[in-house]
Length: 179
Image (cartoon, rainbow, N blue to C red; front, side):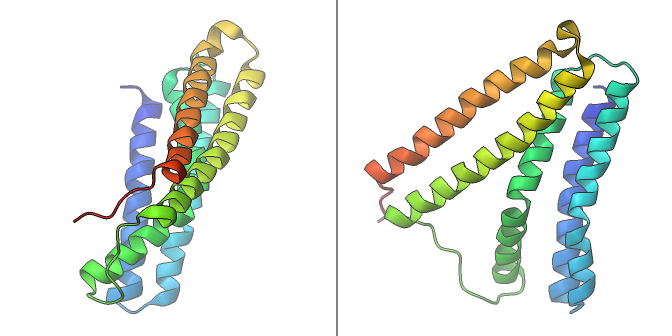
């Protein structure tokens, strides 16, 4: 596995570590500002990944699917970061602190709306990630060195279309409650 792949893995682990530290300092140690500080570190992790990926390409590396995954990771992290933190916050509060209300499984129209919101976030992630991919393709300006980036962009476009189609089906065939 190459260096960029390890950086992506480290960034993903780092993301969840700072989220966990933020939750622990906020709820266990009752240090609200310190918890906020840890949550605020999540964009710094994205910046590190962006700098490492750009430096690797600047130094002449041929763009690979790993570089494309870095762009996808950045788009997803930016678009979904706040909602992932909110999700972790709710789960931590209920399951660890035994406070708050139990998270409920959404059904019917509420589930369809939630799914569509996720698809809209996916569109935002796509726009951000595709902008990074396009800028890498433009910057390198050598189709033989950017073939993997373009191929990843085509696959991601297909995945995005499937995601939106699935979200639309929930409005037609809503998720039923269990039992």
